[in-house]
Image 1 (tube, rainbow, N blue to C red):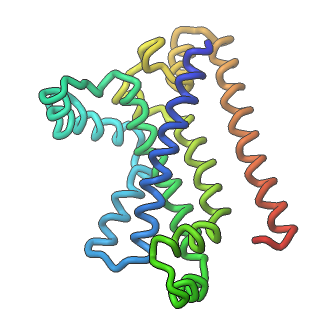
Image 2 (spheres, helix red, strand yellow; image 1 turned 180 degrees about the vertical axis):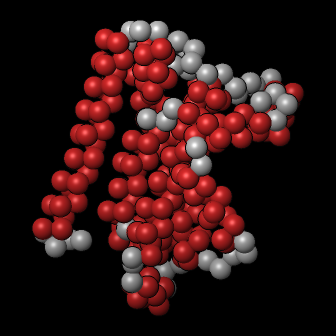
Length: 222
């Protein structure tokens, strides 16, 4: 019972950290830099949010299997197999949850008045310093919202995880896959317990986020 919960929390945490850095990086590049193929890059980043998770999982399977573009290199060079491991759970959760982080970070960056960043530059601050001292602090609400929603999405990932990692008890069995197979095998009590865990945990996350944002709004910070 606790195995899927602990694995899901670990996978969601790692996936959120990875998605955080990737999402922040691309959100900043897309909103602040003039780069070629910007629309194509952004479309690829958002695509997992609109595609069925099973399709995302199938595409990841074609990439990370032993005969896949990346999977073949990892297996033949380093002896690393991705498919049907807990690493596959992280990859699936990261890819599916990344659009949440990217979209929130992008919206946060776009909401910042350029006058603040320009003022910092006129005072001699370099781009990196401007980002950490001006851009990132001003986008804090959007970034934190992105982190919470990304974690919640990664925690509930099912379709892509099932395709890429399978449902191996004690190895790749997360809460969603455990619920599915508990229902299929008639273990209604186990399924209901895990469903309650997911619902309560997700409710607390979203409630806490909304409460924090409301407090900032009431104080005039937002």
